[in-house]
Image (cartoon, rainbow, N blue to C red; front, side):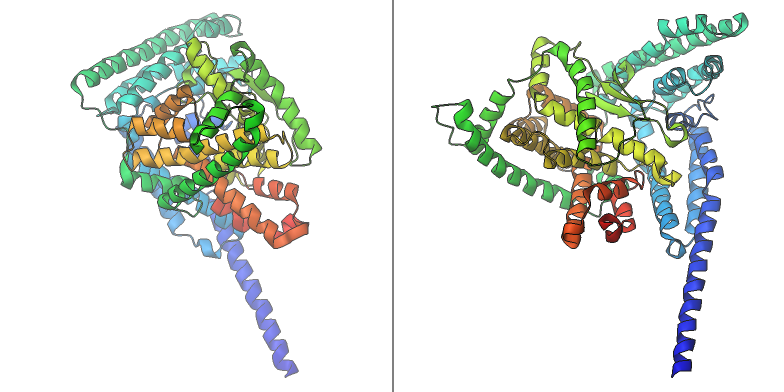
Length: 586
């Protein structure tokens, strides 16, 4: 018996060794085929995206979006997916297996978009060269003269780029045409007087400067020609109709949702959960409204209708907001306060060496959201992260008042938490530090937005402004996240009308008219992205709560945050199996 037991133990050891070796071999094969050499080929075909993540090897390229380029891209995707299919992810170690899943999902999504969704035909707003040029001019990754020479080479390719863009557009969405007009006109700012002054003060030779200016003039002309083409197209669509419906429909929505959300739920399940959460929030807000009513409406009876009671109190609280000229400075002032709070309450480790710069949103990026983050990628992780804040200059006084009431004393704080600390800014810094290039580079929108929404809840749980006013206003903000999902699915799948969408946003989510109309515009220009907030948040929060229930007093909140963020911007469903409960408890 003893000898048989020893033989059995030996067999187990051998089996574990063989399985471990097989996993190592499979993981090694994956890393060898889809490591730096693969990524280099990928960036050669995606030079603008490469610039955005700090990979400048192909920065002088600007491929024309023509039939030949699309065929080249499809061939690359087909070959890469075929190579992935020949590997056995089940035989890989956890790190390689999850990299495999992230990469396969990203490549399949890109192929589907190229071949099936074909938004390159009907969404002309995607043809915008400004961001790549702006990053090259503003990021000191190399001496200025070298960067200007790279820009000069790119400028020479702009006319061919926009000629191909014009040829590609067929049966477009009119709302996308109008966005393209706005952003393309704004993009001319990148190629304006400031660039000429940069050139004049540079170390380029007189001949190089002359060539640069000639190419710059041709690029401006190409962009202006594209704008003129779009304006004529918009006028024709307005007169004759024939525009493609901006609603993408159930089949495309379901497929896009599957590729981009990846939290383990279907669109229908998320929609049902959002409806239930809306009801829960209304019930809690009614309790808070009853608590606050005597303070803000002494001696006045509240309306009988629940939504009316909540709405009237929110309207009164919204009177407390900034003047237009104080909005931008207050955003800047909030960031160090939030950083101090996060450090003092030991929520997550911050990295003071990674700079954050608040700036006015460049004109070529406007037209979709009022605040956003532009973060560097892992190849140039020390470059600046920009917190873009759109100015109110183009707003009428009534629009500015409506906007500022929406981002009042309380909700401005939540906005900056979401975009900056400990939201997007912090999460994307962690993503750049992950050992996995793939998990960092091929970010999942639901994880990224979900973390930002989760960070809001986490800050309030830690005691940031525990007043009932903040809880009421935060509940209003949470309704925005919930109603984003109801709006996105309702519009693109159920055919929700503009009037009904505005009623949902203004009457049930208590949004100002300016905010609601801005969201209506956004849902016409984006697909599934609005659902990513609630999907990602729900998955992260559920996972945290399950670990807390499992570990009890041993649960370490900071450890959970840092373990979760350590896996880059991978889908939540990919991250959760990688986090062991004991890692969070230690």
